[in-house]
Image (cartoon, rainbow over all chains, first blue to last red):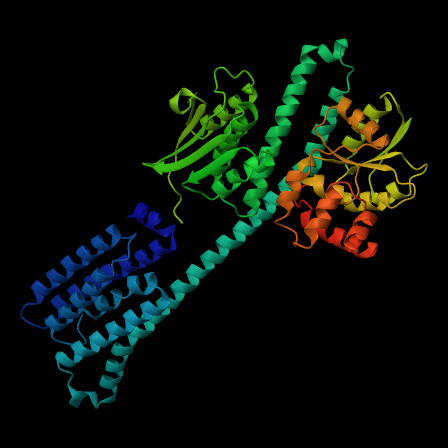
Length: 383
Length: 184
């Protein structure tokens, strides 16, 4: 029970389910005990057993269907509880508490207006049952009886409306919380992007400038460490540019596809290159999206810059807990193209590994061009 | 014989530029400042000003425009990480060229010497003008095209039969519309 309760407590809807489970169990027990102890009629034992069985069954069904909104079953639950009241033959029956618990899930799961409608309909149903089981109008003249009847009638309305408002408030609070978290995250990303651009990147430019100022043909300029350092610096600058672009797009609340579509323009490839990006989109706020963005934008970069492709087609699809992204170009191909930046390919491989995915590079359609495929385990985040 | 003034708000980049340019052939002097105000008051007046687009307390394009109104005006090279997006606005602000910060040192020196000789260091702006067409009003487009083609504001005023001051105002408006926002 403990682990179930823990699992239930982590989301507001589960909290309402927990409230339902506890109060339904208590109400079922109370009804059974009252029936046996008070001996209202001659089929008490049978009714008590029925009450317990129904309680157990309804809890089981509610837990099983916790992710759905089974309005039909909720209505059936109300009807069943009203029938139990009828069977007990008295509007102040021990099943009244059980009847009240039928309101918890609909009142908290439906939108406010519909929830209140459900509650009012249920109260009307109870009034009907009270009339059918025979309200003794004579005894209602005595004040305590009248008060009791009014309370019985109004309690479901008050409780249901109260629950509906509380649930609505909680929902709003959660949306608001998510919104402010998102705003804070976006501000943080903008700050990071500005900081990287204003300082680290300027230092990299300065270092590049200094290294390239070595007199050409001199011993220092030709030295291997210097050449390697220059290559690393150039790769670092271009990687940082990709990161900055990702950060900026994410800070604007953008999506993966939008960021990828903006990539060719940044590479200065607006004319003569057709870049097509489509498929399953994901928010850049998703931590995985950043990695996918880096790998795919590097593939697009390679296709345009190094393979001199004129058509680049990027597709993303999600199936069976996997995200599969492909970048297909019609450039000069991978194997015979020596200018493929091995630095870039290595960084793509590393990223794919980092997110538990697999990167493959092969020939394009009909053997011409290149196909880059990224396959990684991905379960869509529940909204 | 060229005197260069570098305006950039990052000390590392200033140090790098100064170190490279002081050793370069044909450049007699190179100084660096970090603000637009200091740059405008720098004496002796430089032959070439190398201006970063984003300055801590101002906008590189404004500084470029201010320099180009001087008589005689120094040559101005805009120096930015995103030279591509900056080309057209820089051209409108009167710059003599744009240069990416990733440009290797020999090409930087060459570009400085080119603008000092009165040449311009721009790629083709045709595509930029076409792209800008979607950001500016249709009335501004001819003005934009003429300036991108190398006409002076006074020539544009003559052709369009409007006051030079009106040309100036419209140029400022266009620059604001085209200015890259995430670029520095």
